[in-house]
Image (tube, rainbow, N blue to C red):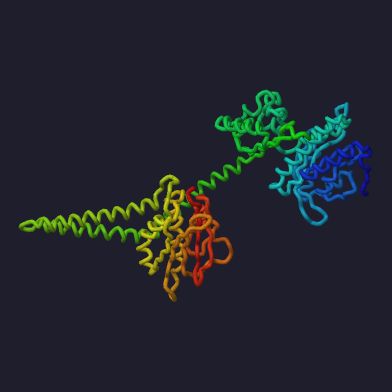
Length: 524
């Protein structure tokens, strides 16, 4: 079947506006087409030719050319879908794959609207074809296309050009674009919403022009949304925020809302154009991930408690054993004839001292592994390091690890959550101690240091173990080189540093092992 070449628009007044329209379609990756059922020809814009890889000198081909581009697995279903639309005289919406001559595959979202004769018969379809292969770029390009299309419409109206048919096609494009689109007057009143908005909200255009979005916003979002919108209109600045919109069935869903002012050549705002992007599933996923991270952080803390439980029991048992021994001694001195009050008092004082020591040990452990709420206070990083190293004393003795500290004096205070910072230092210290488990040929030394830098306060934990693993995955969740490791210690440590406005990184040691450093900004 041969290709048919059709001439371009010939009138000069059409050529400029045609160029504007073609450029807008190119930017949005959305082309328009028109299928004449009588002739079987499909006329289209250059963007459709680009999407389907047709000869760019053509703007019309037989409909069969389009169906031959459709992926074999989708072709039969799409032909049936198109046939149903024609038989029922209804709108056409479909998504399918196309195979290009170079072997590449694209995904196309296709929409169409029937054109009827005076006798009520279908003369053809007019619609759009959108390249949705790269969904992440679709929103920006769609918004750009919308601005260009609306701008074109205003120019055409202002210049009184007789382009009624072209204007009608532009309106059809806006109505068939798969997005929630709105327009507002310079003062902020809603003047237009497309069909997708009406279908989503289950409302009429009159309700929007009368009350705007107020009737459809979540009550908790209403006040702040109207306030921020009023401020954007007053300042004539782009408007962007997230809020919940009620669907026709009563469910509220989260949307990312953007609005941009359109200006005339004098810089005055003549209209606002906006787009709503459904982000509800993403918001739910983010909340689920946040809760999961919290649970994993707690699991890591508990895992650390499990590893240290024997050492903690030994450390607490020492002062408790001394308390028992001194209590027996006090009883003996009091039972003597005559009672030795002075020695009994000495034993009681030792009981008090050892009891306070046991209490201090327990308090340090509770503060380190407690489930308290996050509360940022002024923190001295050296005291945090000292508390963690005190808890680790028995563990380091058991594994034959020597702790060296090089803590700078007069460091500024930080703003942070003390328990989280303790966990950060503890994770890095335990990581370094475990990295030296198999070392026999050299002393096991863990060096902890603090210093001032231009970025804030830097804390370094250096071991003399086997060194860093290959690649840059060590800070990813569930990545571990330990047979029984959870793979969450470094990931959570990195999250804690970032939550405090800092960052965590790793470097090879000077001779052996690795150095983990984190920097935290100082309190202003």
